[in-house]
Length: 154
Image (cartoon, rainbow, N blue to C red; front, side, top):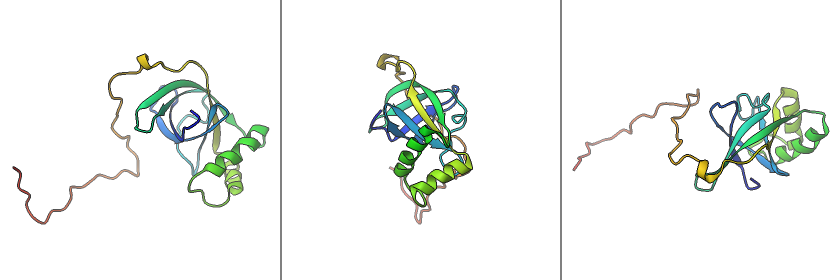
């Protein structure tokens, strides 16, 4: 978990969403909300399933997580938010401004801590869990490439 940069989080048995995360002290910190990544249901959840994958895309482990929302103005927020903001890729402006924006816009900074035994390797499914991409407003249909001449098939 300490090498994780992306985790897949499922809340309430729903679909898993790939989320950028920051490992800190045996837990993962995840920020979501307006202007940040989408994590439906995570802001108000108390539990979730977290899946971590290896360098080649294969699942390494899935574990139940206790979800704790860190609130602006608390000591936990003051400690964790600047760490997450400093590691945030492609952020516009300085990290202090990012932390202020998260607090003002109601973004959720959640701590995902292990809350039970991970799923053992023998309990993982043998087949693929690949799914069709979920519909999203940013997805466009792919058109066939334009060809100037006819391609002969042998």
